[in-house]
Image (cartoon, rainbow, N blue to C red; front, side, top):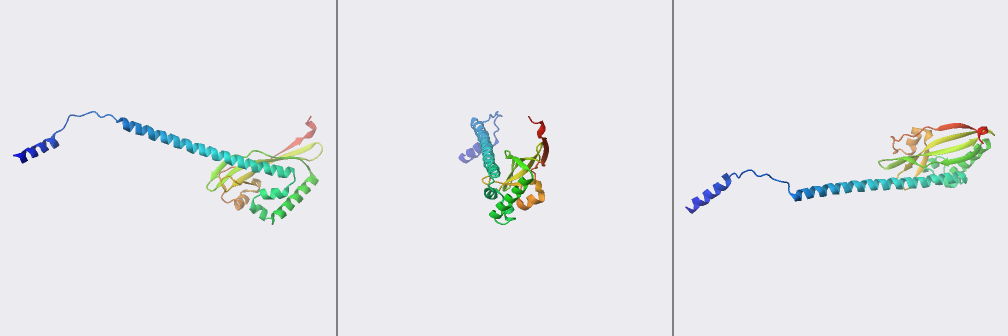
Length: 208
C-alpha cells in the first residue's frame, strides 16, 4: 500500500495543471539590459573619441610637414626639401644631393624668367584612410610676376601620403596624373578626388 500511495502521489504531481499565472520580467533582467546598453554606448563613445584623436594626430603631423615644405622653399633650403620628398621621387634623380642640385637649378632658371612673389601651402584637408595608407590633400599656391603690371596665381594640389599611421608624411604633385601617383604610392586611396590645377591672372595696375 505504501508503494501505491507513492505512485498515486507522483501521478498527481505530473497530471496537475495549475491555473495560469501572469509573469512579469524580473528586475534583474531589466538591470542587465540597461547595463548592456550602457556598455554599448560607452564602447561607441570610445571608438568615436579614438577616431577623433587619430584624425587630429594625422592633421597635426601633416600640417607640420606642410609648414616645413613652405619654409624650405622660402629659405631655398633644397637639401631639406629633398629630405621631405618621397624617396621614390628622389631616387629618380639619383641621391638626395642630386635632387637638391636639380631643384636649385630649376628654381634659378624659373626666377630668371619670372619673379616669384610668394609660395604658400595651405592646411591639409580631406583625410581618408584606406588599408595601410592615409591620404589627404594639400594646396600649394605660387604667385609669379610676369611683368610690371601682370602676375599669375597658380594653385596646384598635392597628394599627402602616410604609411605609418600618420607619423610621417610625403606630398606629391597630383597634376602629374593617376599613373604617376600609382607608381609612387600604389596603395593610395583611389576614391580620394584631387582638385584640378587653378590658374588666374592678376592685373597689378588695378591694385591700390
